[in-house]
Image 1 (cartoon, helix red, strand yellow):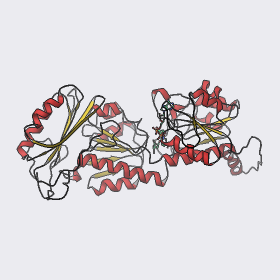
Image 2 (cartoon, protein in one colour; image 1 turned 30 degrees about the vertical axis):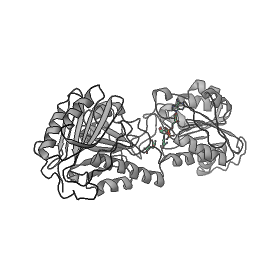
Image 3 (cartoon, protein in one colour; image 1 turned 30 degrees about the horizontal axis):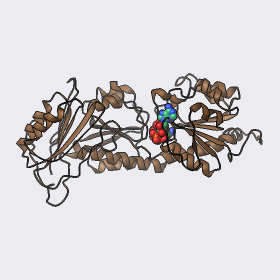
Image 4 (tube, helix red, strand yellow; image 1 turned 135 degrees about the vertical axis):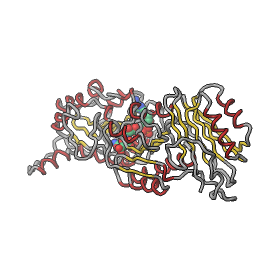
Length: 466
Ligand SMILES: NC(=O)c1ccc[n+]([C@@H]2O[C@H](COP(=O)([O-])OP(=O)(O)OC[C@H]3O[C@@H](n4cnc5c(N)ncnc54)[C@H](O)[C@@H]3O)[C@@H](O)[C@H]2O)c1
Ligand SMILES: O=C(O)CC[C@@H](O)C(=O)O
């Protein structure tokens, strides 16, 4: 089995050095020729396996109860996988992240600059969810750390939850059920409605919003939507030109936008005032999108007849933790309002969605670790090459570098002395990714190539796979 992987990674400022030569240990510096280069894996006629390292040296930390499907894919590769059920407090996260090559998270773990600065060996981050707002994507790209997510595997689950919430709010089911649990019979129809013929206003008509549109029409609702880009309407839905138009016309407003500076408090006192009297608000996007104290006021005044919140600006770290004023200053006020459904960020939490996410992100991580393929990355250019042929003396060179003029000329000077079979290069923002498959290279050639590439001032990270 081929055995040596060299990954070295330095920040553009040169303040961190990361070397990985895992014929013995992932943290040992690269020194020796790649001893088993062109070994048993290279069989003529089959695609070559780009797994030139001892897979058991790759250390992976999975947090927040990543689904078994993802864990299985990673452990089947032979990687060392540690899986924890919760997120970690920042100090413990920093301790752990220093040691690992891969981290898998969901929505709670904040991989900000402070944490990522400590992640000297980190190659890749897997977000086992849709949202990637919890990761500093630019910092990661500038340090050669690719980030992957699962862009739509839980969209249907969220859309179904919202349908359930629309009916639950329209019929005040939460309050009736709570009363029965307390032993009180309260048979009322006052301000309980059918949803047929009502207007649903969808803010953000992406993967979730558009799924929801189809389901809502099947229930007899009229659908309007507002999005910052012009998007094809499904069914008989209608795009409206402004958020205000949507708020003025909708009986139910549901939010499906990403967490961005522009979506912070997208719904605050002024927007709630624009909504129809007795209308409903649903937020299963991100907690920062709604100004919750303003919502509490609007519900207490009767302006808003009901709300469903699945996401909150600050969410507890683990199951069993309290949702109270220590977490968010308005926690107890929110809990006291009538006809409000509060759920613990479970929009995407179904068996189907979590299993699909585990497979999608697990596969993307394996492809990146073993082959350097970035298809699906949310912070790096998306680059792939077909598999190497099974020749013994082929290698794949990966050069992640700053996107500045003149780099390709320098790289081509280095690689130009060898037989480059295929090469691809792409850039995204400040980061560029070059992948080249070279043939007829000996181990001494590879060492020279590596040393020359690493000497380039534009270098962020260099990998050789063979
Ligand atoms: N509650 C959950 O468990 C759960 C599950 C999945 C996703 N989410 C959240 O839902 C969000 C939406 O998911 P998606 O898959 O539909 O995303 P998406 O990227 O497919 O769609 C988002 C849409 O919002 C639009 N948009 C962006 N800024 C806007 C603005 N200011 N005003 C109006 N429209 C705007 C975009 O143009 C896009 O069409 C995710 O970013 C994630 O944060 C939550
Ligand atoms: O599973 C999670 O923690 C996040 C779910 C959802 O918000 C997502 O972004 O996919």
